[in-house]
Length: 259
Image 1 (cartoon, rainbow, N blue to C red):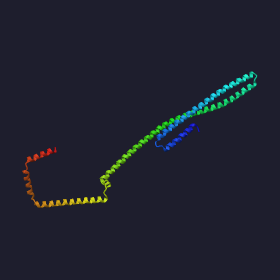
Image 2: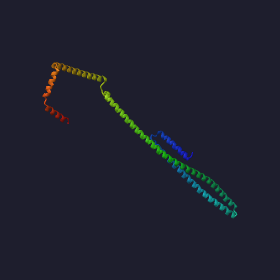
Image 3: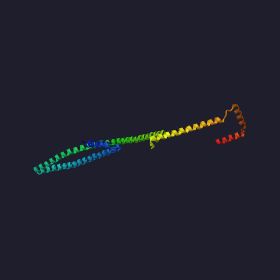
Image 4: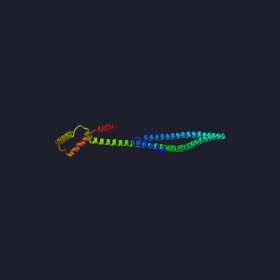
């Protein structure tokens, strides 16, 4: 598993764990974004370490190449002096150094390939981080909008419930059910009070009817039958006896009161 794959696996694992228990997705997204940035720093550090190792091997290779030239020169000098034994020993050392150089070249090539792969993975991870940052902000904005809409809906629902509750209370007050519900009196007490009230009203009604009947009987006994013709004559005489000036004065006074 490469570094980039390990980084993606770690971030996905942590993200899933946080999503299972987090209340605010925005915090989870921010945390995941920071984790990706940390992994990018790790990749960059890995590239730097490989670069350092490759440079050390290249330095060691150059030193071996210098030794190869030195041993080659020593072999020539030994041959010139007729010392084939020394020339052979110099050439053997030259051979050893060349073998070491070949090994170092293989290691250097391997490090160079790994370095190039890490640079490519770094570029891909940077692109993924940028895309994730854009999606993160979009998701956070959607979540915040959804939360705001939720709060509005809850407020509207709460206001509706309060209005419904108030209407129900008004209806209970009008019907008297609310007063009965909050009263300490029992149903029997309220029924007895209602009966008492009804009895009092009935008694008052009977008294009023009796008084009116008695008044009618007294009026019938005091006023004998009157001839209609005589009544008209008396009315005309009464109208003539009224002073018109008095009537006008009363009308003026009435107008002033109304204004």
